[in-house]
Length: 194
Image 1 (tube, rainbow, N blue to C red):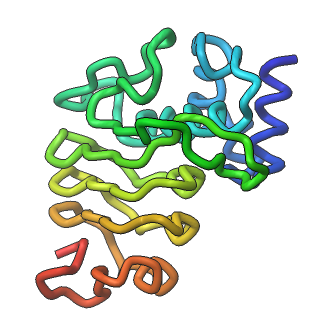
Image 2 (image 1 turned 90 degrees about the vertical axis):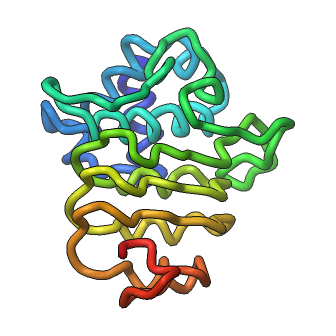
């Protein structure tokens, strides 16, 4: 029942496609399984926003690690008993922050992620767009490939986006460029991908 409830929550909020959730081996399926079966804080929480937050962070982990190669630093990441705000280089609002769904419920929301130069390999997951109050995202100097997901444009509080030193293809979506004024699509000192 817990697995099904979490599946429905993530699918209803359109954080992840149902196909990715049910396909064995995907980062999304592995993250769903972790939150539902191993995580001791997210599933116990009655706060849906916190469950989604832990799920999105777990997708980041599973999208950027392999069985052969993990992050250089990953202190407490996916530690089932630890608050996600204590995971390596994840910062949260010190006090309660407005919940992601806008219904007035409150929780400790992630405001910053700095995993620059941390040996990440893989793709940047679209689920990061579910971290509604994120202000700072630094994934620079890793080995990330693919495209920058347009769901980053959902992060209306995002002030800093650093993605340089990766192997992304294409350009930063216009919706993301519109959101973060310092982001430029075609190089320059403030380009997140140069």
